[in-house]
Amino acid sequence: MVVNVASKCGNTPQYEGLERLYQKYGNEKFVIIGFPANNFMGQEPGSNEQIKAFCSSTYQVTFPMMAKISVKGKDKDPIYQWLTEKTENGVMDAEVTWNFQKFMIDENGQLVGVVKPGIEPECDEIINWIEAKTE
Image 1: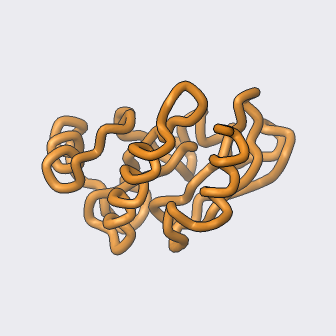
Image 2: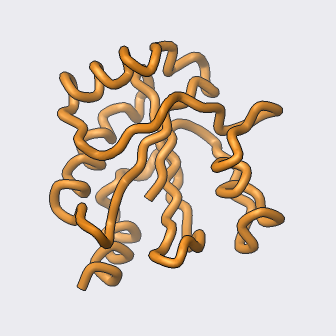
């Protein structure tokens, strides 16, 4: 699962739910990858080192965190071009609307769903998807 994250957002406490999912289900069949992004109201202003320190000390994040990227606009990173554009992923358009949008990708590298930013990571849609893949 790929998630765009930010340290100074109303959704930032979702790090807790993401980490719980990773602790419970994280293995060779499930991983969460966080992509810090500063695209929404400057809510991720820190350097990569500051972001890592914040995530580790405040939320004890152990899932992989990538370097800060752009998830929308003219400088959108290629991974987010693929995630958000049907012409790239062959499945759907799913423009990032805010921090903590969750993209579910199956074991074959196919985009299978998107969960809106305001929905908690431990929602039924995500848990059911993970459990179906990890049984």
